[in-house]
Image 1: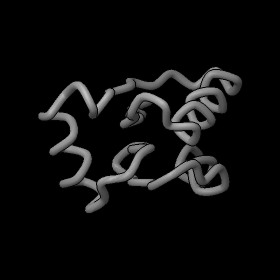
Image 2: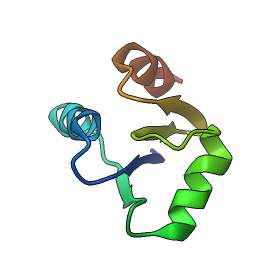
Image 3: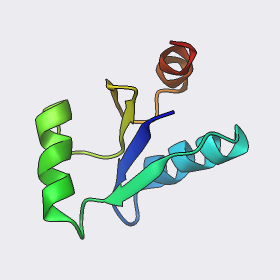
Image 4: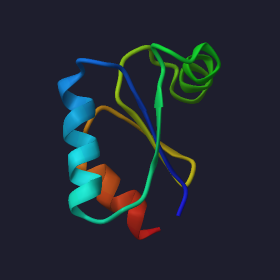
Length: 76
C-alpha cells in the first residue's frame, strides 16, 4: 500500500491524519516539507496546494484531513 503524508511541524491536521492512519494500522511514509524542499515541490506539483497535510493514497491526492475521502481511496 503506497500512502504518503506531506506534513509540517505544528500542523494540527497533520497530527490528526497521522493519528488516524496509525489507529487503523495503515502504514504510510511521512515527509516534513518544511525540512525537505524536494518533497515540498513534489507536494505542490501533485496537489497544486501549499497547505498541509496532503495525503497521497495510491495516487489519489487528498488535501487536508478528509477522513471519508481517505477511506474511499483506501478501498480502491
